[in-house]
Image 1 (tube, rainbow, N blue to C red):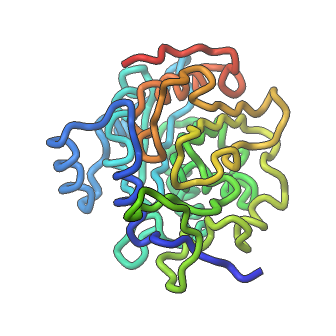
Image 2 (cartoon, rainbow, N blue to C red):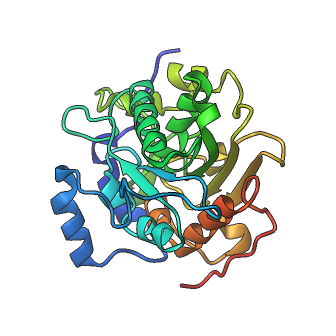
Length: 293
């Protein structure tokens, strides 16, 4: 099958930012600062303390994996310090640099970078396994590491926020009269963009072994207002309830209007993440988070 790339992916972040509606957003000052230091490889607050030792209550270091065109300091500006305050050893990386863009390389190449980083985290902390929290591509890419590179034995939990689990059929882009779905373009923007198109060769191979592999637990957190990974139900994973929990934010918080980028900083999402990490298994589907700030 000939692969198609999404229209407007070169401006994906700008379009998504204009359309996303987060419950809580970083202040203009903190956002500007994050953008200034992102190219310097600065870690988000709370992350990459290589002297951190996991305790009995939080035995698994948490590895944060950003999305396409994002960087660790921007993507995890609020979740990283929250995890640290809750007692976790937190680590984050930048990956997939191509043509000056992060998260743009072929997904299997980025998964290899993630595998090297996890090895480094395990060596530093003495932990046999890690928990992974990823957003967008970062919620899907670890599945290649786990299922196609033998990494499952090193992962306890994968918590995926708005992941491109089965690719996307299009994105919403602004038009003169509102918004429209765009799904094709003649110009290649980035390798990971092509990989994440629904029906791509990569997506076919990723999911040929099934949505899950034995060992890790999986939690997917999605919003029905996602304007990037569409349809939003394509984010969900198939698997037994003992291993997989699929969360739609609006099922418990119907007034939540976070979009694809807004989920990063949504405190309701953060509560689901903490629940997933603290639960023996995936997130508790009966959990009822506070829907307020």
